[in-house]
Amino acid sequence: MDHFNRAHQLLAASADTETKFLELAAQAVVIASQSRWGGVGFFLPESKDLQVVAFWQGDCLGEPFRFCVPGSPCEAIYKSPTVSGDHQYIHYGSDILTQFSDSELLMRFPGECYRAHAIHDDSQTVIGHVFSLDDKPGSDQKELRDFFNLLSKRISSEYNRFKREAELARTADMVKLTRNMFSFVDRSYTYHAVSQGYVDTFAQPHDELIGKKSSDLHGEAIFNNVLEPLLKRSFSGETVNSQIWIHPPNIKPKYIDVVQTPFYEIDGTISGVVLSGHDITPQKVTEETLQKLSLAVTHSPVLTVITTPEGVIEYVSPIVEAITGYSVEEVIGKTPRLFKSGRTNPSVYESLWKAIKNKQPWQGEIENKRKDGVFYWEYISIAPVLNDRGEVLAFVGSSMDITQRKQMESQLLELASTDSLTGVSNRRHFLEVVESHLAESERYKSPLSLMIIDIDKFKHLNDSGGHALGDEVIKQFTQICEQTIRNVDILGRLGGDEFAILLPETNAEKALILAERLKDAISAFKIHYEQNTLQITVSIGLSTYQNNEETQDTVQSLLARADEGLYTAKRGGRNLIGFV
Image (cartoon, rainbow, N blue to C red):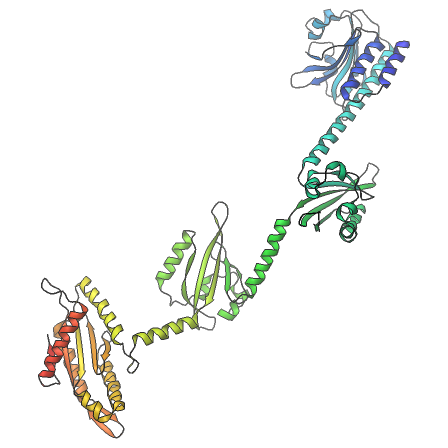
């Protein structure tokens, strides 16, 4: 029995690695069975080979090798994924070369006697076997069966232990490598595992961080006020998700999203807490910036609107009620058509939609309508919000009420284009209108005529009656003209008592008729001023637009001929029409 004792003593020796232990097991099986060869191998399901990882031959270790299981003495062990009973242990006492003549193992190591026992993993699946092979016949022995049984269990146990340790080591290495902040803290708030994220954040190596208390790493104030209350919740069995500020030395504070998970031992007790955190400082900064922006938008005098790609309003700033009369609730879910007045030039909307369809920003002025029906002007900027693929996520619009500015512009334009005494076009504006109509007549070959009118003996009337009388005569004269001419005709004051009337779509014959009608109306009109009643006459010069090989009228030439006609009428005795 000394050989069994020697085998057990061998297995009792320390082994730092799995390989060393398996080599001792191979040697022990040779000693216990008093065989020439012995080994430990693991099954490779893909190839149906056995990889012999530890092999003892004679009095020394042999090289690892592999052989095909089918057709070999150990084949019965692998008939079923989980073997038990008699199939766990096999014994061939002699003549195995005859029984397994094609075995790769026996071709390499010709033997007579073969013993083997299955090795299992934690799920009792066969993963390999331990075996002995001798070149002499050998009987089956209960002591050897028991030894093989015990040895296979020991190998299974050690194999699974080394496997778990390797997995733990691999997990620890992965934890060390991760850039997120991953750690394990025990009930004394001491770190037993930390990731590379801790090393990067606190600028300390792993060895210095392991064994350090949380209060030492983060400082007493942060620990007492923030970390300890959170960790106590996890030690009570609660999984906690929180966002906290930490203050690593020599760098800016970081805002961390942390998940704390209780770690339960097999007996159900909580021995520590697993912490997983990642830096969300950029998101926090963005969130605070957005909060500031939201407050700025909320309190800004500029109206801000956000719509879906289809134009449905999702957000509108509170100032919408002051500008439009509609409440926020009345606007959400509607489209900007809610404010449409119907008075904006369609070309404005055409340019707006063209820009939107091309995912381009747009700016312009639109006249809209309030809830109470009052019209108002807005200066609007619209821009698309695009994702990384260039798809429109939303449209953002901002607008300012420019009604007062538009009213001022209108007033200034009126002052710049209107005669202050009569309210008709002044000389500059009238000439611009003539030039515009002249271009149309040239383009469309349409007739156009022009009258210049002078009040007869106005200078004498003004000198004798005073400027107040002269102004009153001019105003009432203007009223007579406006009542007599057609809607399409344009009246302007060129200066003093000289007026002009542009007659669109009017040839010479019709112009003469209109001039006669106007002259007669003025002659028949009585002007009342204070206690006096006056009657006036006018001289009219008339010209018609010419566009032929000899003459192509300009504004100046058309005016010049009408002016020549006026002087012809004056020289003829006044209250006449002169046509050139």
